[in-house]
Amino acid sequence: MRRSRLAGLIVGIAALFYSPATALAQLSSFGVLGGSAITNTGPTGVNGNLGISPGTSVTGFPPGVVTAGSMHLNDAVAAQAQSDLTTFYNQLAGSPCTANLTGQDLGGLTLMPGVYCFDSSAQLTGTLILNGAGNSAATFIFKIGSTLTTASASSVSLMNGASSCGVAWQVGSSATLGSGTALAGTIAALTSITLNTGSSLNGRALARNGAVTLDTNNVSFCSGPGLSNLPAPPEVSGVPTMSLPALAGLALLLAGLGTVLARKAQASR
Image (tube, rainbow, N blue to C red; front, side):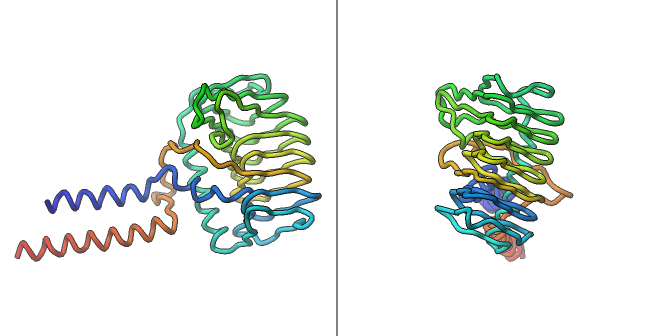
């Protein structure tokens, strides 16, 4: 009995360290998140929270407008969101590739659910079609080694149940959306994200270290199924990333573990 309780506590602790869906769930309220700065020109609309951490510089709001959310300037909410973004980014990076598309333009392709990898840069010129095959929770992950660049007026078309909620772009450096681009999915970039004039994003613009630059854009985060079965993030320098709720839960589990061990010690006397 004692062994089973002890095993249960250990499993619970492990689950806190590796909860695949947690990071995106906690980021779900953010439309835009930057690391160093957020700048805007024109009447940009951001649906959801807009946050920055550890930087504090946000310019261009107004004329930019944040709806269905709040602005978080290097506060606890923004800091936690950046921590969750690191976890989410690492989860995406740890997803095994379905196909390697290095050297191919995404424009003109029709892709089924999967993980599509680029060793270096990725380009979208024209229209990319994502076919959900009738599954509203279909997942499309794009792992890009360096930059993501879209040509002007490019787009992502969703069909057969595919949803922007199930689309993610993990970018190893920076993402740039050309003027008039209509992109779907969450962009998780290591450095910066630039949305040129009139481009729109049905998803989230999440930059870990650099700036998010906006210009008369529409950013609207999605709500629905998708991206719920990501792998656990790899350890960084031997220490897994944990959220504040996970730390609190860990403290409770450790307290319970201490109680079990104390009772075991008393029983053995």
